[in-house]
Amino acid sequence: MIGLIQRVSQANVTVAGEVIGEIGPGMLVLLGVERDDGDAQIEKLANKLCRYRMFNDDDGKMNLNVEQIGGEILVVSQFTLVADTQKGNRPGFSRGATPQHGNDIYIKFVDALKSKGMRVATYQFGADMQVGLINDGPVTFQFQV
Image 1: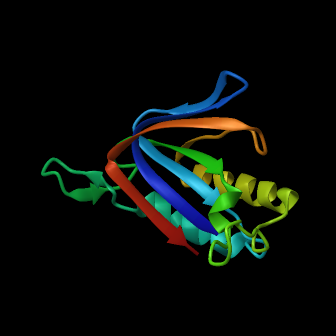
Image 2 (image 1 turned 45 degrees about the horizontal axis):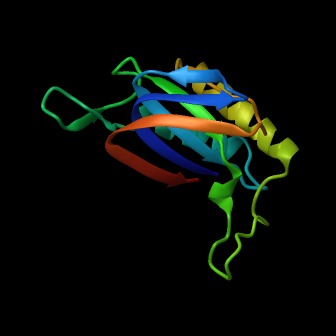
């Protein structure tokens, strides 16, 4: 499982011209699910993101987590994060989860964040979407669990 997280002042997901998920200050999570991902990866990444100190305190130091700033999380599944890009000129997706497994893991991941008290916005799985964001910093981190 790969999580690409961005500190944002706002983010949204639009499908067919309609905003279906949006947040103010917080964290945009692009989630790449691999075929062998399960409960252990879900818990590890959810715990990491809830505690990760990527927001500035009053001194401008990254000492606060998303909960401490009263922030929200927008989670978007993005299978291209698990692409093999080492050979040739076309990505390979053999490590990626099937659509059904990817959706199941995505739902469980969102539920794990919510169970930890996070305010989470979502989107429509598998839809052709546009993701809009204002990256604050810019600050972007990648986690692989």
